[in-house]
Image (cartoon, rainbow, N blue to C red; front, side, top):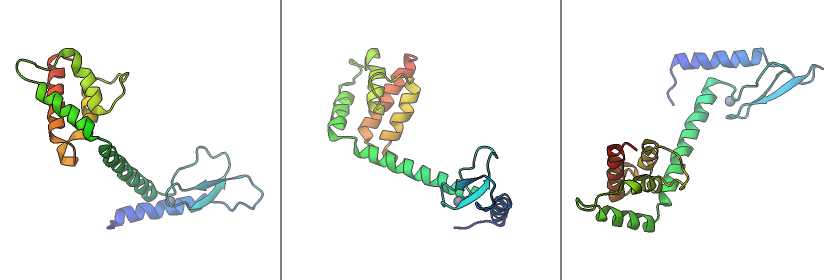
Length: 164
Ligand SMILES: [Zn+2]
């Protein structure tokens, strides 16, 4: 991957800094063993120097964060697989039942948003927070179901109208 000279310099400096404070474990002074959580490189430093760092360098820290973001996206994709066809059918029926004469009832709005977000009944999140969670699950751009997304929009529209 492309790495500009500035970030290379930063990485070099942190490498130098790490080795400047690194001490061998066999000189009779108490040392802490520190392991980078990303590249697993091990070094030692005198004990009692405060909280040990999680990473050997900024490069490893950033790589670890990128990896974590990727795993989060993968979990999201997996959770979509758990959007069962039963759920989707039920939501389609609920969307079809909403007409001018039979709008979404006020008491149904929050429970519906919870269901759409896959949240438990006792979830205390606000309508807006539930909406955001549900968007991640149902947005068509990321593989969600279009009609269910429309139901979500309708529910959130009503939530705002009732100021829930
Ligand atoms: Zn590392």
